[in-house]
Amino acid sequence: MSQIQRQLSDCRPVWVEVDLGAVRHNVTTLLARAAPAALCAVVKADGYGHGALAVAEVALEAGATSLAVALVEEGADLREAGVTAPILLLSEAPLEAMPDVVRLQLTPTIYTLAGLEGAAKAVASSGSAAVPLSVHVKVDTGMHRVGADPEEAVHLAMAVADAPELDLEGLWTHFAVADDPDDPFTGLQTARFLSVVSELRGHNIHPRYLHASNSAATIAHPSARHDLVRCGIAVYGVAPSLALDISDLRPAMTLRARVSLVKDVAAGEGLSYGLRHRVTNSTVVATVPIGYADGVPWQLGVTGADVLIGGRRYPLVGSVTMDQILVDCGRDSDIRTGDDVVLLGRQGNDQILAWDWAERASTIAYDVVCGISARVPRRYVRT
Image (cartoon, rainbow, N blue to C red; front, side, top):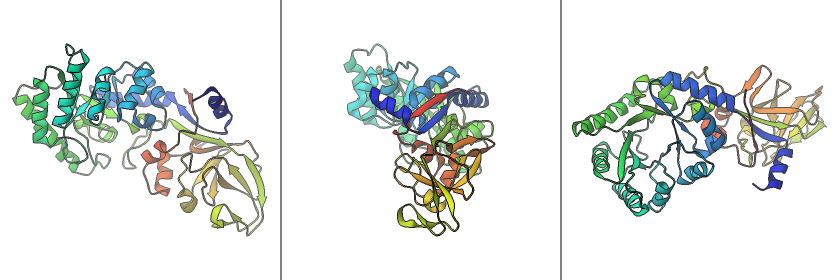
């Protein structure tokens, strides 16, 4: 971002406020819950929309021992910013990116023979083969997204253990339904994973880290914590699902704006595109300069949602547009241009959660926080 872009973003009356104090609290709380397991803070997708670098630094200060990202590019950004902690790639990197994985000292996940060979070749070509590259082998225990089938994972792990260029640092899997504590499939996945672990031990192969728990499993499945837990959404104080109690965690994101225009609207007038909403009585309507290009789901204009102004809830009315929304403030409103608006987060004694939007928009809270676009400036506080 150029200097003039930074200056202009400071002037824009829309911003995300990220409470790094909440991130610190969440990491220490999750660590206490998972102990003696270590914690890997997942900061992919720009820290789930919160800012990867800022979250990574605070998470490591709070006791996380490693980070995880989805893409080599995400790991490169952290390295270029000076982060030296271990960074796990959660998906196998493209073969052409393996030299960069080695150069950046990232920890690749491996689940194909081609990936294994590519990693070993990249190490050999780098001139640093004297220091084996730490890798983690991923087992597909039933989610069927990425990972090696259990039998294949055993052979891959043995091949890694035999490769002088590589070090089998970890073996892991990922749960499909850990956010539903009553679903027995998590137990089945655990059994499949432990079967692989047992077979490897029979070959005297003992990875330093066994890990299976995402945020949901860290919270709801104590027996699956093993040596390391990978916490993503919970680090940001957002529940993996509404079935899980995270009352001991604090949401880190507040989405704020300021009223840009206030006008009187007569009874019977329509609002926004399509004029789908018509006011029954004369009222005061406030324009807030944020829209679906910023991450406010278009569906909220259909299903309805609230914002907080002065600690009170007011309804969003009319279609969400690309850059603006409208709020019905009531006939005798004293709301003025420049008043603070909270779309997500706490104001006064009330709070709007990412899951509130998610339920209205038929999506999940992950989608909501990751969907706050890059054109919304992030500002950091510590409380």
